[in-house]
Length: 64
Image (cartoon, one colour):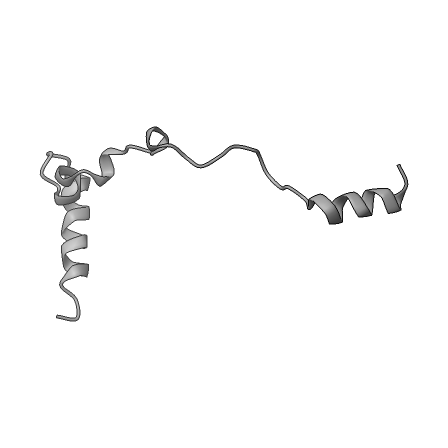
């Protein structure tokens, strides 16, 4: 193929970057404990989670 053929092929079809694949399905969602209510509020017993919850609460109460 010549450069002109390649160029015209690109003009007609465009360039596709990345992987193929379609829209994501519901099952593809990432499920993490960090988003669950007990972890957000620090109620599950972890000291670091309680501390993070305290910081979140302080941040939420700023500018009120």
